[in-house]
Image (cartoon, rainbow, N blue to C red; front, side, top):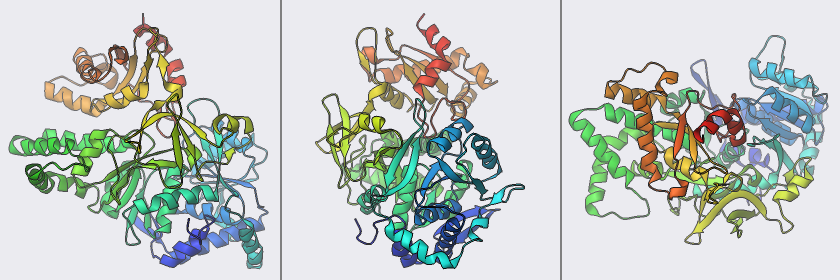
Length: 588
C-alpha cells in the first residue's frame, strides 16, 4: 500500500493535486462536454466539507447519495469522507420501500439526490424515516433545496476543525455502507473501511496498462463498489474520467471520448457482439464471406497460445479488413476492458482479444471491496474461462464442499447492525464464506462454477448447477434472459426471454411476418428455432443436467419488475413465485 495514501481522501492531495489535470472529471451537458479541473474539484470538495460541518454534520453521521453517475457524486463522496461522516450510496432504480428500509436501518441524516424524480422518491421514503433531516438535489428543482446551498454556508474559520477531523480518521475506520441488492430478503449494509478499498485498488492497479495520459469512460453505477473502487484506482494513476450520458448513448460517447479503458458487465459486451454479428450477416457476397472468415478466426483465438505463421498471417489481414472497424466503434484507443459482476462467455473474450481489444475478466463481491481475482494484462497472466489469479495480499482456499473462502485486507468489517449474520459468513478463523462454488485450475486460476445456494437436486438425486447451464445457453444470439428450474423435479426446465431483435431479423430472413413479441413467442417456427438452440447446447451436459422443456416469455425481466437485482442477477425466489403456474405446467 502507498505510504502516502492511508485514507481514501488522501487521493486528493497525493494524486489529484499531483497530476493537476484540466479534466479530472467530465460530463456532457446539453450536448457539450463540461470538464472539471483538479483545482476546481478539490475546492468544491473542501467548500462542501466546511458547509457540512456548518449545518451540524458530525463524525459518524450517515449521508445517502442517490444519483446517476455525474461529477457531483464524487464531490459529495469526498466531502462526506473529509467531514468524518459515512457515505451510503444507493441505486437510483430501487424501490421506495428499499429506500425506506435503508434510511431507517442506517439512520440516514442527510440525502443527496440527482434529479427531480429521485427527489420525489426520496421524499416519499423519508416520510417514514424520522432520522432524515434534509434532502438536497444536484439539479435545480422548484420547491427542492439545491446542494450548493450547503457550500454557500461554508465558514473558513472551520478549516482547522476540518483538518483536525481528517487527522483523526484512521485507515481501519468505517468509510462507507454499501447495501447489497440481494436476491432474497432485505438489503444488507456491508461495512467497508478506508483500508478495505485502498488495499483493493493498490493490489489491482499495476495490472492496468494505463497512465496519466489516458481517459476512462464510466457508465456503471457509482454506488456499485466495483465501479467506485476502479474510479479510485483511476485517480491514483492520474486518469481523466468521463461519464457516459446514459446506457443508450454509450456508442456515441465512446466515439466522443475515445477512452483507453472502461469497465462493463458481460451483457453489454454480448449486445455489442450481437449487433456486430447481425450487421455482418446483413452483408452479401465477398464482404459477407470475409466477415464470417474473420469471425471464425477470432472465435479460435487464445492470447496464451501460438497458432503458427499461417494463422497469424490470416489474423493480421482479419484485423485490417474487419476487426479495425470494431476498434473504431469503441473509440480506437482501447487498451483494456474490465468485465465483472457475472460470467463472461469465453467466445466473447476470444473474439475481442483477436480483434486487438484485451478483455480482462475478474471476480469479487461487495464484501471483499470487491476484487478477489482477476485476469492480468500486464504482465500477461490469464486463462480464458477463468477469473484469473488471486490478487496480491488476498488468500483463497476451496472448502471441502467446493465453496470459495477468502481472507485478506479487502474483507469487510461486517454487516451493519447484523452481528449474527456477520458470524454466519465470516468464521472464527477470519475466512469469508463467499457462497460461490469454484476450483483453482493449474493450482492458480480461479474458476467459478455456481452459487452454492442456487444448486438444486432433482427428484432423481442429481445435483444441477443452473448458472452453468444459463451462461452456456445465453451464448445463443436468440436468448436474452434465462432461468433454469427443477428443484425436486424429474428434469431441469427453463423460462426464456428471447432476444427479440435477433428473432425479428431471423423472421425476416425466413419470410415470416413478425407481428408482436407476445405473438411470436407462440409461433411454432420460433419455438422450433429456440428448441434447436437448446438442443445444441444440451449436448455439452450430462443427460440429468439437460433442459428438457422451456417456456418463452414476452416481457424482459427488470429491476422495476422485481425479477432481477440492480446488478442484473435473477432473483430466483421472486421469479419462481411470479411464474409458479407456468413452471408447474412444464411438469404436468
